[in-house]
Image 1 (tube, helix red, strand yellow):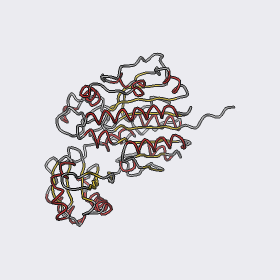
Image 2: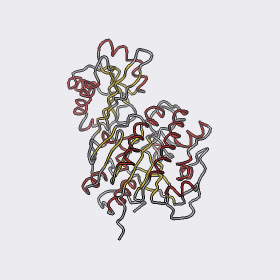
Image 3: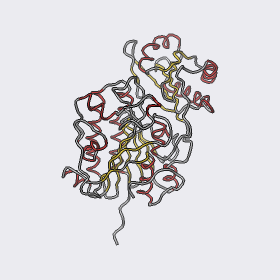
Image 4: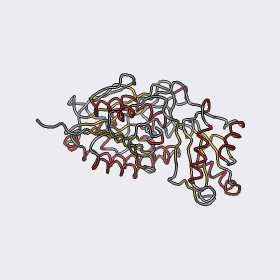
Length: 403
């Protein structure tokens, strides 16, 4: 009797790559947004052959990425789009939703900056004074307050439309480890009604007029508010390897290992190594630059180039797929480049999925067949659990689109 092949799952989250406004987007000021479509229009089309063959152009209209036929039905590919159950439009809520964790209420935000009493508590806990204290674009905050920070050493404190507290410091004035420790103390303070989703360390370097962030960003996230599919996999004895900021977003819960991914190239290199060496389990990777480097800066050409590079690496990953492998490509929220402002947008996540021994043959033939699946973001976690263990998790949301 032939033994069944060991099963693996690869989930790639293209940060901020939204696929159309959610029904409640108007409540967030995001009505009519669609990151993928508007990016393609603004760039004069996108060139994404690998993800296009998986059905990307069939999810929403994308100039340069034509729709694909779903014939023959039952082929190895699935495309569609996924909605969250709960509120929010940031990385922490988006990644949690993918793994079955839903917030019962929105996390706190500070559209007018942090209250004076809270700032006083933060300064006492951290042992550092702060400056700025307002919602701001991170690069603008560093440029405007960087020289004052260098003179006096006060940390640059800012927030955004999301539930975040961010602290920036020049590495020659405050070491990165000192900044991390300040963020740990801030994380302790930001609890109860002030429990923001993330406290983020933003070290930077350079001279006035040419300040630049280092790769030393670190997120001190709120621990998941409920059980996740990562917990289910861990209890089933499956390897769960986070790549990039996954470890931070889940406070390391449910992970058996983690690899860095401060750039897309670093994260995708780690995924490629795991595709060669990992015997079984889940690889869960965040690709950050579409959000952090290009999305918030409305760098349309950079965003498009980043997607093209991701597409090429997806094609390479497909070529390495084994018989027991599943690949899922999705997102956590949007950051529509033509929408006013620079914040995230409340959008569906695209879904591309591929399995089985026919994957490479179908790819070379120019199409996969398959079907469309529209559902919950939690369907990703449900599908991974079903694929790797053959069972479900009745207490968690989501239904598997693959078994």
